[in-house]
Image (tube, rainbow, N blue to C red):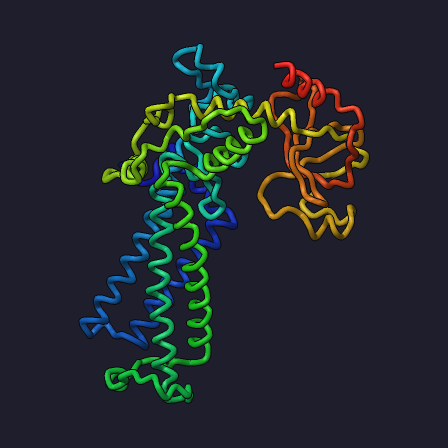
Length: 405
């Protein structure tokens, strides 16, 4: 099978995004500078150690790019458009996606960026310009492990290169630090370590250290959820389930259905020797006390609770959907939410059901007419553009119904 075919050639457009451009630039700068520094100034190829070091640097680069491109182009896997459960009775336990014109399978969520329902969606990652989900979770996590390891190796090369080349030019004042420089003095580089070379090495060192810390933290976060056989979204659903049970004092016991009770078993659900995770992305192994729709039923309960807790607002000013609207005040401009979640344009008189917010911004769903109901419109909008409805009949009716039940 060829790597790029006519069927998946359109996926190459994922590279045309700020996330992959920055990620690939960092990889290229760190790997190129590490190879140049070690070969020209620090560890020449005519030595055994230098050859091993060179092969290790090439190995890091190949492994990082292999997992990065697989995470990007293999993708998370998507629920087929118009999908329905085999047993129609099970549809009552599932949410319906108006965009994909089908039901959301267990563990799947609709991604606004990809415009599809994603299998076992964890999050949409701007660095790969794709979702992290069922099929590419292992590739993505492997990339998060290999990138800090490769950058740590590169950082050591950068530090030792600058130290060895500047050893006799600058007095460091390190009287207690003694490094054997005899091997370095025997080696005369064919290119002097100039100021531009020093600046490039120092810049690459900053990128390598920053990547090691930032991506390393993301790796530990991912492993934490993988060892519990969860996703980031499911961790949030579990927290909201406990909050709902505690708030209403229902006495329920919520057991996360996909935790198999063993970290090793959970680990093997994602990482396999073949590279293909276990499961078809629709049906899953579950806890003995749970069933296939335990989590989806909890999601439906949270969705109903969300409608009860939502507050109705009415737009009193027009808003064009700008990310940082200067016309709405300096505080609104500078306190814009740091998220890729969308902003929704408002016209005077629009009705919005707000579910959360900050002092200057609010997040909610725009109430649409029946003709506009095909796609859900939700996102952030400035708080100053709306006012609370004094008679929120929808919320009050829902609350009354809940008390009666």
